[in-house]
Image (cartoon, rainbow, N blue to C red; front, side, top):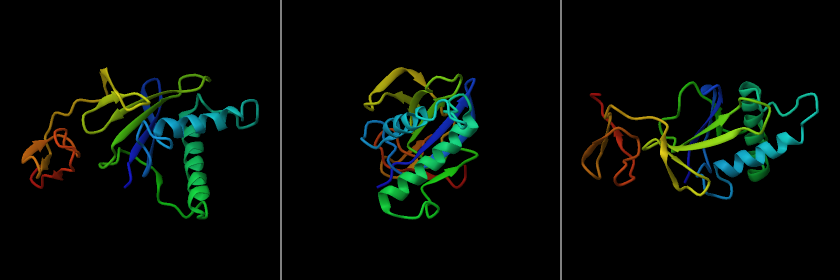
Amino acid sequence: MSTRGNYHFCWDGKVQANIYVHFDNYPDREHGGFSKLNHFFDKCEKLRGSMGGTRFNDPFYLSTKFVVFISQMWDNQFKQPSLDFLNVGVMLVDAGDAEYVYKIHCDNDDRPKIECFRMYDGRQVNEKGNLIRSKKLFERKTKNYFCKKCNADSAFFVCPTCKSHCEWKKDA
């Protein structure tokens, strides 16, 4: 099963580019979000001093390089031509079914800082998937979803109580 994620490439705390990745976005997996980003940054580090450079301080170009990196991963893993993929895309808003959001801070030429947040409750987690209690990405105020399993209203696509997928309220 896919674990969907959005990758926010930020400058000065503001999202400049939003990339959706359809699979392997758990923070604590071998091919998960932190691992994927660190492997990507390692490849970018090798470009330091070249014409293209790392682009660590440019969220637009860095996010574009990330899309190419993900498509090449797809090509290598599934032996598909690089353009024959539907696993990565550029988004205007976060995907409604994303489970994690990664914030990549591109504020200087150093390797970007990564933060990860769970979508269903907005809580920050570390590389091991453990909660970092001090920070929340957002606070949901409206309850536009309904959990059939718990029979309760929810502000999230995934129910915070039972972790099952909620349905959108048609009258919301």
